[in-house]
Image (cartoon, rainbow, N blue to C red; front, side, top):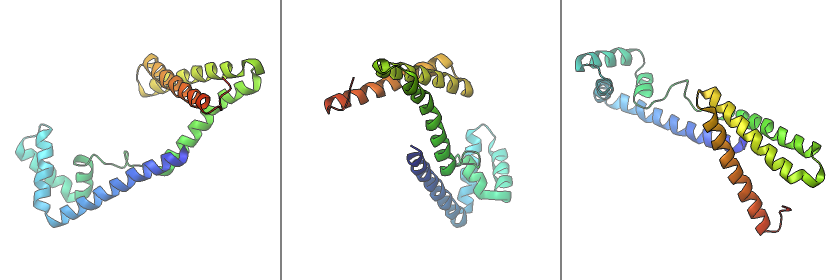
Length: 170
C-alpha cells in the first residue's frame, strides 16, 4: 500500500511541477496577459477592477510564480504533494490497522477464528472511521458507518472470490 501511495502521490507531484513550469513559461512569454488573468481572479473573488489590478501588481512584483501558483493553480507549500510522507503515513496506518485483527488471530479460539477476526475487524474499522471523522471535525457516526460498510463489502467480496477459487475456508 505504501508503494502504491508513493507512486500515486509522485504522479500528483509530477503534474504540479509541470503546471508550475508551464506557468513560468507563460509569465516569461506574456506577463501582461498573466497580470490580467490574475487580476480577473481577484475580481471574481469580489475586488473592484482597480483594486484587483493593484493586488495583482503587488503580488507579481514580489513573486509572480508563487502568486499564480496559489491563486490560479491552487498550489502552495502547504498543499504540495509529498510522496515520501504519504508512503510513510500509509505504511504506518496499515501496520497499526493490521495489529488489532492480528491480535485476534492469536487470542481467538480456533473454531471461532474467522468470525472473531471478521467481527473485530469491522469493529476496529468503525472505531478508526469515527476517530478519523472526529479528527477532521466531521460526524463520527457517519464516518464509522461509511468505513464499516465499505470494509464489510471488501471483506465479503474477498471471501466470495476465495470461495469461487476454492481458497476460502468460510
